[in-house]
Length: 315
Image 1 (cartoon, rainbow, N blue to C red):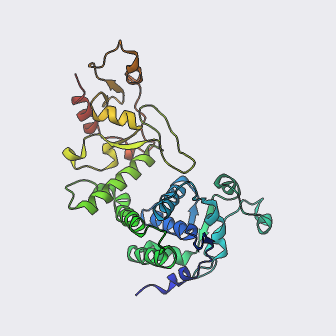
Image 2 (spheres, one colour; image 1 turned 180 degrees about the horizontal axis):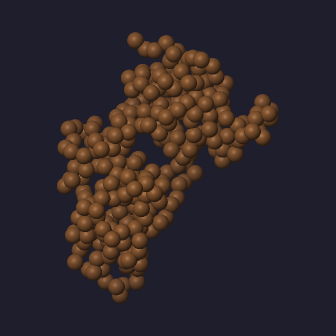
């Protein structure tokens, strides 16, 4: 039986776009559910951070096939007009100097403008408790999709695929020690891969561990990728300590054993690379450079994984 506290999700004040229900609020709530399940939102006070906004963009794209028109400031602002089981469903926590003016404020035009007004909001505490339960999180997701996203122009298979992967991977994000061992099936493999990517990129703050480059596009795509140190085919190890965040070109170079991070936390370049060829400078300049490490010791790469990379550097 569906928890009656979820009945408030049947009455969202959802606008219309091109003759259909707008997906903004449902996608934001689905993003919040995913973040609660993955352990990144642990109290009813929700931070309007890059993770949540990126998750919203992902869900909006899965729903509509479009990403650049997601406009996260719309649901983050207008969700305050809806009611939860014990009070306002969503209550922006405005800065002290702004709070008295809040009733007169108009809708922010950009996410940057919105975050200048508030960077946290209070989700109805009773609804938060419901979203913490994994089965009820699935029920809430199904209810939101059924009520607002079942439309011929929306992609239900993509929505379900994304949510299945996100909710399955949440257990691994909360318990990364489980990200090692043989994979049973494709669904588990997808969940583990999603958790590996999320944990590695966040550990490195979306910054390349070699080039130091960090870039997030306006529609929240990341420049870096999550790269295994010991390949998964050999290690069956998706723990973030077996990974680095790298730009695609340097991910390719490491996978082809042209560069390697060493146990000395330095980058090493294969002696097989011709030092006299100018076009090779983008690799050669890494030689001896420090490996960028996560701030948390918990996520720093294992010495054995770094040693494996050094042992396989082309000689």
